[in-house]
Length: 428
Ligand code: ARG
Image 1 (tube, rainbow, N blue to C red):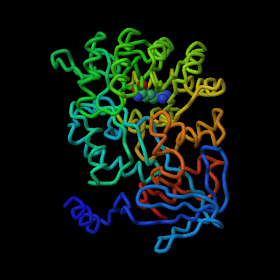
Image 2 (image 1 turned 90 degrees about the vertical axis):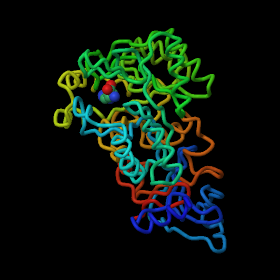
Image 3 (image 1 turned 120 degrees about the vertical axis):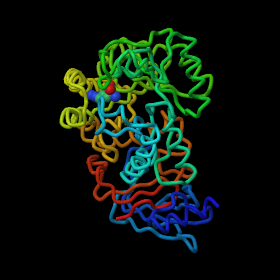
Image 4 (image 1 turned 90 degrees about the horizontal axis):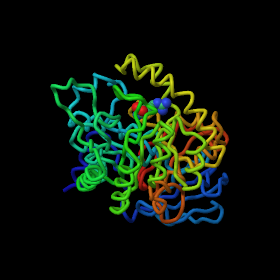
């Protein structure tokens, strides 16, 4: 029934199925192939895909094409694993900033997410970690489930549900007057309430927990650098999440919030704009990932006012934007682990690859930037067994570009081929 429905809608809408039939064998002939594990580029390779997974990979000269296999010729292109964005908000529209967002229902936001999911996948991002939807309806969880059910195309998703934070902080919503008495669904104060909130997120399908350790840029009435959750609250949240098998991502611009989140055992620090030497040292010692969205500043300062972003937020952005880029260079230079994450939804979905330019400008080689968006991101997701490299047994999530992105990662803004789970999503 489900399959029939999918095939019918595919025929009507010209859409594409997003998983391969279990016995379908496909061979990709790759002119160049980026081996993100070794950090090298190999020539004339063939990838054999059986159903949705990679069953063989090796030199074309010695890799036989099985009888009946479909051959995809990418011999003039460079092939690499599908990209991973560790910080998206697929249900958020970048052009609805500040008070403009207040009129958007949860259902409308989720439907917008359908479009955002397709744009993201077509841009070569075959997996995302969605770090929270607004409202009360677990829109990002519903989106993940609908994609997994094959209702429409989108990336593999790990979803957070609602963002957990203190009352009046970055994860609350401070736009309404006191008479509205509005408190965001993820608000919880004190260690036990915060623990209970983790349980609630897990109950309704969160794969990962997102917390606000410090204030933020796009929120009203808080300072980006100010600590919000205390060490004690974060210990409770992270202890509970890990007990339930969920990793924790902490939004943190400010130095003390970054320090306490790392001490409490967080898995990744998001933004990390004002990280100091102590934070860098701790992140390195504990193996904590930083996920630094160093493209956003461009979009916020160029388009933010038009999108309705509050003047106080634009002011905060001017304070942290450049510092974040400088601290990216510093932290990466000291050997802190970095995973690619962009805060898509703050800027338009589908532009996820624009951040590669800044990662290279601020200290990475193109290969290192690609690794941050593939193998390192897969590690932070806890999905190294299924995504992040072109290896036997992993999902056939594969993209291609003209030229060689290992020499120039900015070419990833122009992806010519996208495959997810063995099914071709896009081919130019
Ligand atoms: N969601 C983040 C916040 O509101 C966006 C920060 C964007 N700015 C930046 N320089 N990365 O705090």
